[in-house]
Image (cartoon, rainbow, N blue to C red; front, top):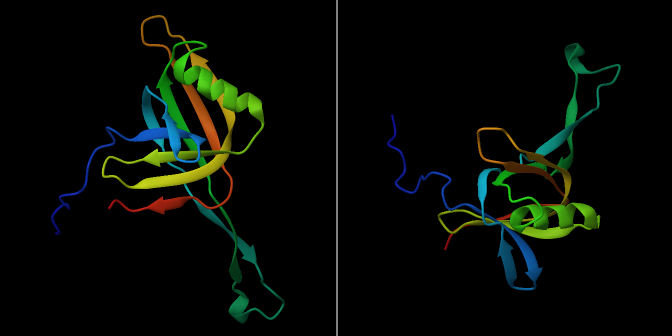
Length: 143
């Protein structure tokens, strides 16, 4: 069995950032859980009456950048909650970046499709959001 690579890490210090100027990003400060997008590719069926041995045939179709979900510590109407609410209300495709602990970055464009808030009686308040990726996500390896 192969040993675990020294560069593997936990998610601590992963940042979700909104592009606010050509080279400036604003970090969402209190994200507690982040799920990068799961990219998918359509399978387009090309089965025909003479497909060999009655097996369905497929070719790759369009790719989809997927969705990103995140959960953050909620301060209603302020901080991260305000940034996400403003983006949700804008109906504009915006640029965002995920910065991983090792220095790699994932640049994505998209918009929020869902935004919710939870206020449990005996636990921290949290906000949650779903972000739809538009176009190709670009992963840049750490230098």
